[in-house]
Image 1 (cartoon, rainbow, N blue to C red):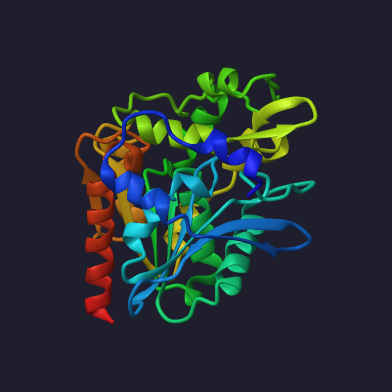
Image 2 (cartoon, rainbow, N blue to C red; image 1 turned 90 degrees about the vertical axis):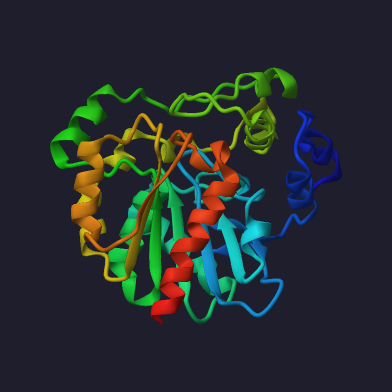
Length: 304
């Protein structure tokens, strides 16, 4: 990382000791070429004998640092990688995007990180849609996928959402970093008491280009077309183990949605609600999120 950028990344809000410890364990910053695009990821090797490997996939417009405050805790007994999907974060851009190229991004990182043995993919929001596609196409390469608060709806509900969803794609540029940071908002909008985590995400969401400071995403990667594929079919057809985590206060989750998702992943698959968590559940309840994830993985370990 360029030294002149480091000063912009330090969180100013009061934060607990565990967060500072995580920031001190920043992971290895790596790039891998995937179909002529430089895909960025952060890597934390297991601190003791690894029980498996975990790939963390962010939501729409996100980046690897959505996970960098949790990954060190997970790397106690897992090799952990968190990628920036192409067109987002510190990865390069492409002329077009679909779920297949996202799966290529993920497989490229798994290969470059030299994961071997049990391998799990955890995707939040848009990342969960991509994990579903991975499980459908290459489920034989995975032990399991964990979907976190991804609104994988029935076709009619998805079409209705597409009509209501605001368009994203036009970038704004700011002359001042702090001015831009003040504009950072979680999408979809929600409250979050852990201001230090929201600030951490926001600071890592900006880059300096010739026109000024702007968000780290390519407009072509953010179009509503990215939700247009039959992701419910992908999830149902995934051939690896499946689990679902959700925020009990998430606006995107209701009883109808949860019943539908259970029908896709199977009645015996773990479905765990995180109390007092909204859509961005790992920001609202980070420790509970890690605990729930560890519980799922432990149950899968025992079945091996």
